[in-house]
Length: 318
Image 1 (cartoon, one colour):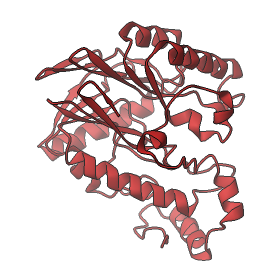
Image 2 (cartoon, one colour):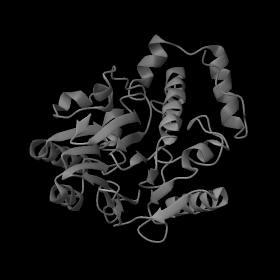
Image 3 (tube, helix red, strand yellow):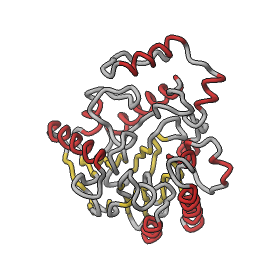
């Protein structure tokens, strides 16, 4: 997908079977890999990930590594595992101790600050991330809250810290990025959940991007971990954006609910841009277990993996 001389390539997200919102954006001056993380929900419907989800995670990680080799800049909008690559082994993120080296070596990393507007868990992860990047030696880590970088004739901007969903969310804050080239604007707005926050909505409308890539509200958590009225607010704000902006690409939390498409939101998905089938694997995990039961070898692996975090054997998928 292009706007002017900016080209965007979806890499991984829920419409492609995993928790992620990884996106590759390139202009004539610079190539940016946004939030190269992938993760699987440990439990949905009381069930661990299905083998098809692990296959999707493996493929997502392969694509992330492929595009990381091309990137000049890599972003970390916030420190949730589906938005960055950690320096440890985990099959739920499909990483080992060297994966992060392939992602971040010799890159400029535009990251959320760990000093302010950050909750305890993310500060802890961010501190570990900072140390691993410093040990790497070849990457340049820039805390980029409200930052601006000129790269040739391309400008990369970040918002001030905005809420991860509603104002006062315990999940903390995120950065929203905008790439500008020859007057065209592409905005990457992860985990704003609609947005729910009126402040975030106002920020997006003030930039008025030609293409908005945005994380939708968590419909699957409505009435449980988040108030129904907050989710409704996120949906209303998302519809307002779809009416007022040229192109909206919907991703992330909303696609964890199998009934999201009944909401009649005018937006593209990562899968539709790539011309592939929509693969909402997490949302349909209960159906997958019923219609395509995992092998006993796989279920045994899941049990053993849960007991031993240093378990090195990959899941039996093929």
